[in-house]
Length: 247
Image (cartoon, rainbow, N blue to C red; front, side, top):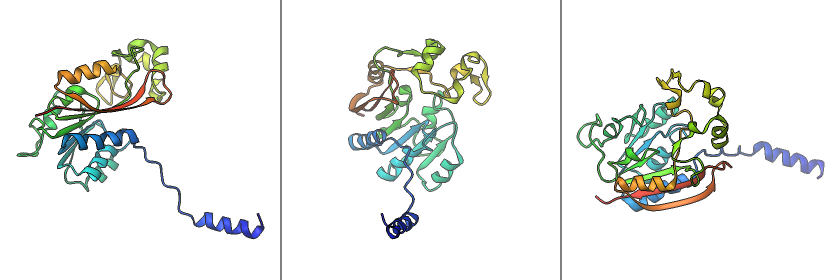
């Protein structure tokens, strides 16, 4: 390339717009939300534990692309960035609490009469989360998850596998070092034993048990997509589901 041509190239590159940041949102999960709204006549959504790593991006996607009448985000670590963005959505309510609490389904209830959120969810509500029991009052349940493949490590606490097998099964995390030495110590941030906090990977769940549990709650499988192994781990596959029920 001639000196003049090189200079022109440098000038073009210097004036070029920066490359857009890659979204942390997973396309499979976005398609799952689209599928739920298409199949289930969803009018409101509850995003359970949706802040970590994505700053409630799936809640905001549902609000921006599907316009539900109401949305509730439940997480015990709601960040300032999420609160700032949420201020632009009058239909979005924030509940800063663990979505596994027994009171959470009632707290997530619709605000047809009172904003205190003490009524059970009504038909037309979807649940985006990890706990099937939390979807009991809902009409559509979205499951964006990484289930264990077969029975390799499923259907029991992953911590029961022992440290070596546990590290093989789950992704690397900063809190894994020394974890087995403090399982029965209290995590001061959560007020629970380390073995019981959601900051570490807890359970492996097989597809058979997931679908059986959802069936017990009155749901049937309406849509599913499978992409294969998740993050290269032998025990996990990336799969997504939409369960629905009448009434």
